[in-house]
Length: 128
Length: 422
Image (cartoon, rainbow over all chains, first blue to last red; front, side, top):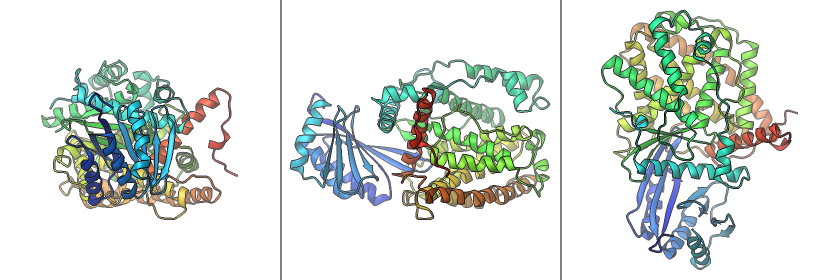
């Protein structure tokens, strides 16, 4: 969390099609406190998009809740780096959210509600 | 055009973007290997012995004594010696300088050759950085600000090209260094050719090792290269690597980023652009026009082979659900590249290319047919895990094998990562 109480997040996903990208962008943009930076990566085997934004704890909670219902796979939220990184994990069934705190402690939730996620994300934000 | 990778001062935005991505990759590596953190993963994965061939040994090794002499040799020798020196270029704390230097040298050599031949360098020369996973991949990424472009080269990509070029050299008929330089001579390479037993068995072993063991790290024990085709090995490895690098650079020069163009069409455009640049360069320098196109076809065949083998290992003959719908398969790219072979190529070059592509179809694809059932057999015996995504799968196996190698060096066993052949 920075001095203004905002968290810098990185939402990275492999682009399946145009609609997939638009929907994810809309979710992140709806909670962002600044303009969302869209970083594109083209590889020999596919296109990956990273969305970088500053968000409040409350807004990030809503973003994760919505992504867990939008993406057709599980969601990993990892707070151990310089940005809180959110990615799809095809190993996990849809609806599962795994939160990794800065000390590596993991919490797994199934289709969480905002109220369940908020205290976890608040802890995660204060320790990052 | 200035080669950005060779500048002494890289923008902070570029370094920050590289450092962030590399740290994420090493942290994932640490998770997979049950290590304490990214620092330990970096220390583990970047401990590599040096190659250790002197320029003179290199010259003998590739059988170029009769072809590379006098001034040409002195120039090449200076380049090899310069590559050995620390270029003191900016790096992040996570950079594997040794691997990056190979790619920067390749990029710089290409730029120099374009300048000498056509009077102008490549349109773009993005910053180069490496990533540690065994993923067979390269990717162009925007920096955080969006103002700069960075090519990330996975360690596994170069290793796979080197290994695959070895396998091709072990499988194909003898092609002398002099033959490789001329389209007229390459037309004359004729069959029938019986694939040597050694080549066939190495193919099988390597395919199974990549699928069930993962990408070996650079400088680990290499596949045996037949002495009669060592020059072929060098040329193929170089042209396949150049093709991958120019494919990425073509995404930039063709404005795919600027215009946000996606889909199958832009990948084919990048393939065709890379191949046209390499074949016209070779031809203008008096070398074979067909050779780089042949190598590009082999590179795409190499991707197709691995894709198919990974799919079979995970699902038998089931669907490859992890492949993005937004992206063409290697086999699609191969077919489309053949459809777009530059029509203005020299007649001798086109005849040589038809001959060489025929060899790919008859010999390399035959090997795939022969050996894929072994992968299926291994799958039926439970020899593979389900992939969580292609890149993750390959990266996972790469890292676990590296870890296993380290444990073995310590005298410990790690049987669960070994492929069970019984």
